[in-house]
Length: 512
Image 1 (cartoon, one colour):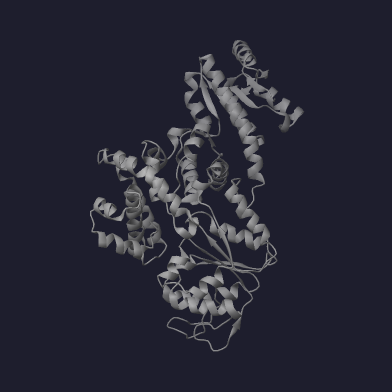
Image 2 (tube, helix red, strand yellow; image 1 turned 45 degrees about the vertical axis):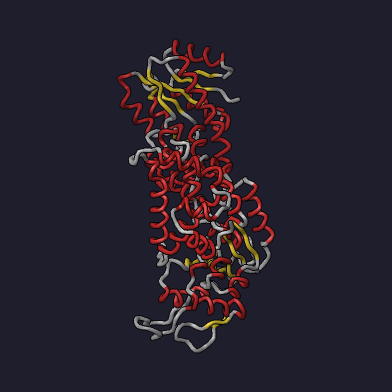
């Protein structure tokens, strides 16, 4: 094990720390000034340096703050603890903001000092592993069995030109899967072109996909290639395919059938050699039943299906992803990467992440900017994470509002209903007992608002129908779970008529 390096011109301080750390089985090496430390590093090399550096600020042979700067340039992941007298507190805070692991005020309580150094040792060991993983980080991260299944699927499709349909909740990383499929395919050196079909108005989407000729419509002052032509020889990623307008689905089907299409206003067929990868968070089978998605197009797209798991289904990946996103946020902002304590990681791992990996990335970016210390503790986590764990019913409330569809979960609704049977009674009683001002009393409302904003910002025009459908489905499934499938009793509990619940069950396709 690498030693703890102690830098202080006060012999008594060095002696006390050496003895206390040796009793804990932690080897030490002491120095009287920063110059000796830098010489030792030059002699041994950075790889054989300390596990943790504990340094005073004011010493005859140089400043501890200057030493901190020099060390961080050479060993950015090394935890540095700055010891400071009260008069140096402002300097210590400045050092802390510049990348110090923590500062230790003098005179210090010896057991607390040892505990702090032990925490730094643990962080150093964890950062060694995390840094190694981040350095060689692939385009996708995940050790959970569900993600390994995805990776195996990508591997099997590596040399294929077949159409792939990726399903998964919003924010779960469907575009990353599409990129990986392209990167490991024979088309890797050709273009990868992505388009979100839900984010482009219907009137413009046809031109975006297929291009247009000059004068095809008002404002078309020049001919323009569409995404199919731009992706010729490569891969075209059609995101949120479930929201594509019905009449455009017919044109897409023709292209998938023979590779030919016409630009808007054009009279000559254009041939495109394109591999299509589509993605959706929608239940396409249900969309077909509703008559808003072509069945023949569905079967044409659904040649190979890859289901991407929600983050709550792969909790073991949260620590790795969190460290990766903290590193990446720090690089983007040009600051020292923050570290996250084990307790904070544990709390974060228990969060339901209705926004999936994208939400975790946003949380890490928020922590990089907002967390006051270099080490992120539980108290530093954002309000939605802290509030979610503040009440026994909180996690259940998140789970009830996390997006879940039959297509995404492939048989999960029955399991989800079984969970609700256990959750709903406690959840209802828990939330009902809270004052209206309590954050948990509004957890479902804030979740609904976030979902509505996400859909509206994506350019959706059917937000009312989508969310009303999910709201009614959740209510009826919960009531049926509580009443063990007895419709009349469920209707009574919901305050609706039995004919109404029967009609809704049929309209919503609920399997009770």
